[in-house]
Image 1 (cartoon, rainbow, N blue to C red):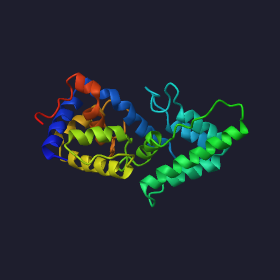
Image 2 (tube, one colour):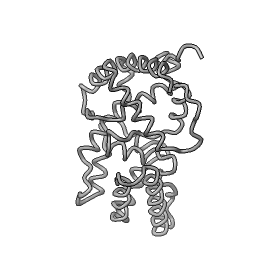
Image 3 (cartoon, rainbow, N blue to C red):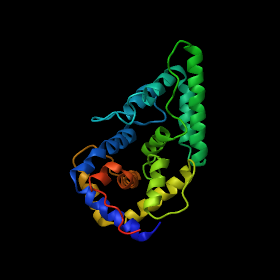
Length: 242
């Protein structure tokens, strides 16, 4: 990363955090807080626990959109094979194993669960569990379970960010190990930016948002820098020069 570019975009991000538009993404911070409050590995009824952990007072877009319902499908799996689902999450949250192996293993668990579901419901139209190799939903579970260590994963945003920061060696395929290394590096640098921290803390004052150490702040930065909407609106000005 080129430090001058990082500092430029940090300045743009701080300016953005002081604007009303920065509140549009606070629903994710609420979801993180809700998950932290409600997720319990030893819960007697995992379906109830899982449902509560994924509630949000303003938006369901993380778990339910058009042709995208990972929460509903996981609840079907919990009804069908609760112990198998529990094992899937225990393996995913096992920090003794590598992150890429855990994510791939979770995809395998979900593939198996979908296969079992379709065998038992041959006339069902369900043909997708939405926890696929793009890692989007799996990374949300990790980000909400371990806020200081993980954030939502996006290969496309990582590539766009690295381009903007002057990095030439871009990933060619999913690389969660590198992604989280970049995220943690950015978050560490942001801890020295008191202007960013003050603006961020202020936007959390008015709601039920997670206020602990969280890589969501680094993800908000990546989302901001790579969002075409913010660029078109002039909220994120490009680095001057080549």
